[in-house]
Image 1 (cartoon, helix red, strand yellow):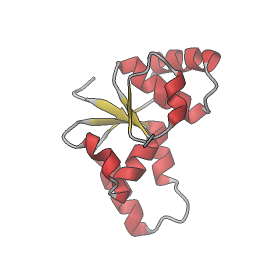
Image 2 (cartoon, rainbow, N blue to C red):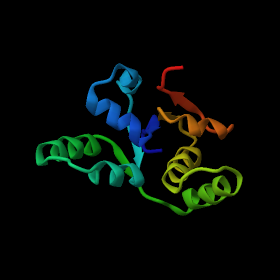
Image 3 (cartoon, rainbow, N blue to C red):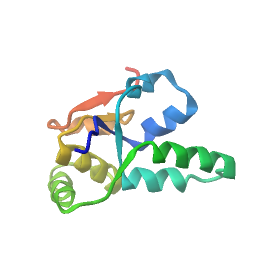
Length: 123
């Protein structure tokens, strides 16, 4: 999809901003994010203006993907078959709709067998 290599979950973006090594996997790739991740990032509590500026720069470097009809269909299917929070189900649906890997530190995504995960959490 438009040169995007993978979809990043919100927590991977947070790790990236924190400089954590686990997200080195993102280096060199074109990153897509769901509009859900964008909203989660810009609405983080206790964010200073400087931090918000950094967050917006990171978001600007990604491709933000809205909730298109195909994503809604994937979301409905995921919601019927798996117990995920609404934001997580939309992010997973975005990755599935475009057939892209999802980079995440959230183990809950592993219940979706057809989802190609790049897991950045430590076992």
